[in-house]
Length: 246
Image (cartoon, rainbow, N blue to C red):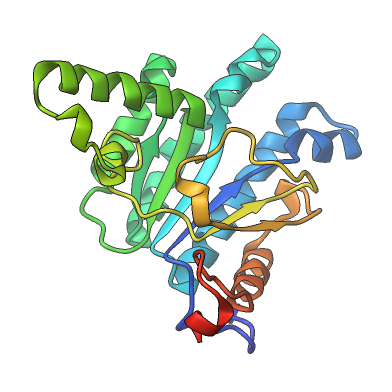
C-alpha cells in the first residue's frame, strides 16, 4: 500500500508516540471478553509499526501498559502479560527483517520474570538494527518516571556529581527513561478519549496532539498516515509568533 498522494515525505515527525486505547470497548462491541480486544490490537501494532517505518518515522513509542494498569482485574493482567510474552517472542524475527530496533521504557523490574526475559532477548537480538526504533512503554507512568529521575538526581547531588545550583533541563532529561530518545513531535490517542493518561508529561511539552474516535484494534497504517498528514498542516511556533516562523 502506497503513501497517500498528499503526504509530504520531507515533513515527517521524527518521533511519534501513541496511546493505544479502546481494546476493551472494541471487545465489548463484538460481544467478547476484554482480552479478545487486546489480542486483536496486536494486528494494529504490526500495521502501524510497518506504516511508521514506511513513512520515514525514526522513533515510534507505544503506550502498552501503564503502572495504573496493574490495578485491573487479576485475570486480565495475567492474560495481558502472557500476550506480551508471546507477542514479543513472535515478532522479533519480523523486527529484524524490517531492520527495526526494539527498546523499552518504564519500571521494567516490576514485570514478571518471563516478560523481562523475552523483552531482554528481543532488545538484544534487534540492537544492531539501524532503521526505525520501536519503543514499548511497559509498566510506565510519567509521574513514576519523574519521581524516579528526581530521586536519582538527588543522590548524585548528595554525592557531589552534580551541583544543585547549576542543574539544567538537559541535566534533568538525562535522568529520564527517554534520555536517548527525542521528544515526540506528535502524540496520537485512539478511541475518542481526550486526555494524556500520565504519558510522557515532561516530553510532551511541545508535542502536537491528534485524537481519533477509532478504537485501537481498528487503527491501521492508513489512519497513522492520516494523522501525520494532519500534523503536516499545523504551524509549530514554540512560543514565537507566526511572523517570526515565516
